[in-house]
Image 1 (cartoon, one colour):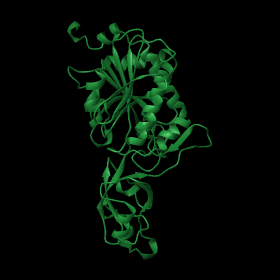
Image 2 (spheres, helix red, strand yellow; image 1 turned 30 degrees about the vertical axis):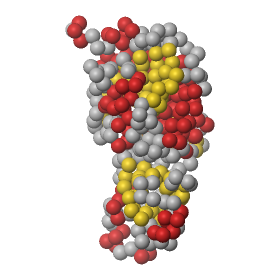
Image 3 (cartoon, rainbow, N blue to C red; image 1 turned 90 degrees about the vertical axis):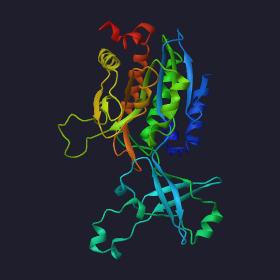
Amino acid sequence: MELLKELTEANGVPGFERDVRAIVRRELEKGNTELLWDRMGSVFGQKRGTETSPRVLLAGHLDEVGFMVTEVTKGGYLRFSPLGGWWSQVLLAQRVTIMTEKRNFTGVIASKPPHVMTSEEMNKVYPMREMYIDVGAHSDKQVKEWGIRVGDPVVPMCPFEILPDDDTILAKALDNRVGCYLALEVLDQLRVTEHPNTVICGATVQEEVGLRGATTTPHVAEPDVAFALDVGVAEDGPGSEGNSKAKLGKGPLITFLDATMIPNVRLRNLVIDTAERNGIPYQIDTMLGGGTDGGQFHLFRKGVPTLVVGVAARYIHSHVSMVSKKDVENAVKLLVEVIKQLNRETVESLTAYNQI
């Protein structure tokens, strides 16, 4: 888990993915993989199997939700705006990292003690525009001297930890460093496994602010089939007993529906059949409250058969989230088994609608 720990603890909000990209690039280069880039900053490694085609894209995304400094007050406090989707109620009293050109600074999203709050204030949900970050400065002049400026990225803070069950992983940015990890692990296993295609594994940029890297990446990768590797929402908290929603530890997620894509049904069924044939547990996810890079991948040129495969995660789009190590391992296993079947004939059959 050292690689996943390194990925999650690296800082990389949309548009500022440099540190995470460096880790992914380092791992891609270990096997003398041919690197592919777009001009947005997405990075991929290309590995040819026994055939040059079809071309199979597996993509996580580098960025995590965070913020940007938008104002420095006279008293030295920082106003901020979101990069990605946030619920303001999860923010107060949380520690953050402000990344500047020369160094990082620790701050806290300020909150009043209950001792000095009115009953009206205590029952109010504060909007983000009324919040500010305290970095311990005493004036805007001091903030300027330190090198903190409007436009600097702000990143949540949370260390990586494996909890006592030896399966639950707690960290920041599991959305979507898990997807980056899956892409790298699948590529690593395919280096010693025959596959009848060319795989392109890596990660896009700026998914959390509108699938922007996913718009440019296909022009570089030119995929015939694509997998967006991402997390889904685990709904297994108290009171959810007996429901059929995604849960930690019950297998990888295969997404049947989200706000940006209805997947290629033949590809979806191929993945399910592969899981069942190999005894790999899996879960089905349907969620209209969000989307993934697949929303852009499947619209490339004449259309690309695309599916979202990932794992369930608790508490995403906050400072901390959780996933199951077993789910991550089974997701890698499932993806490798699927890729071994994706020869030219199989991929062509996914879109052979003229034969119906």
